[in-house]
Image 1 (cartoon, helix red, strand yellow):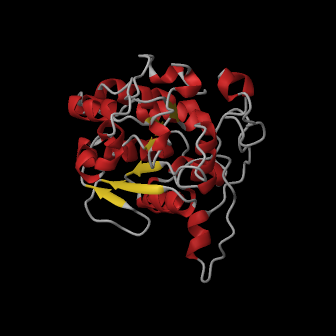
Image 2 (cartoon, one colour):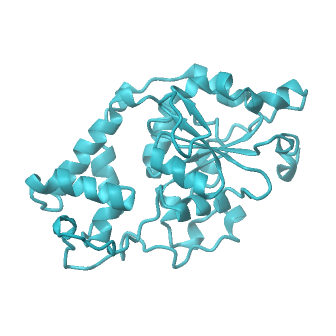
Length: 302
């Protein structure tokens, strides 16, 4: 089957692409990676950026609340650091041994006759490692990660993405935010009637609607034609997706919240909660089969 027709049959369905978050979505929060990640971020802020340890809890909360990720917030308020060094320090000490292969999820994903794409704020190294440990590295067409949305070098993109222009969208890790003055965001919000004007971040990430819209373009998804289905464990990310017209699935709870069309206690509940995703099987439409390439050989750009 020609690559352009690879998903011709599946496109007859309500959804022609499934966007999956990675961390705490494809594996449970109870794995402990999220908690350790927070600890590593706080340690990096103290050890590498010289931030007073007593300010860390309030600073982390404000940066996360206002910028989507602590990393994006740190760049916005003026801290200068290398992206790769940050990711290495934060992710390099995560308890990956807590993750195990998930043959049940693998079987579910491979049985879905619909395009599947990872969309994560994490960097490429972390995303590939997690997918490999879970045994899901060949279950997705590609990975949209930190480097995808925060690259300024068009030459690093694959040939089938050459029509997407990123130059000027963000700053590279070597040139981003060279301000020497640090914006006091804690002091800013401690003032009565503090204004909402804050310094902008050079980092593109969820829950920014711009980040989601760019991800759709990169994955060649047209939400005006057929809605993609967006899976994420973050209520904020889900709500952002809903605002730009996506159908959404909140993972990690069975309680639907504003912005969520569906809610799954576990990603393993996907078939019982969304049996229509397997409609192609019921209609005897040929199930899509992958070519066996590792996901990062598609449209991960770094």
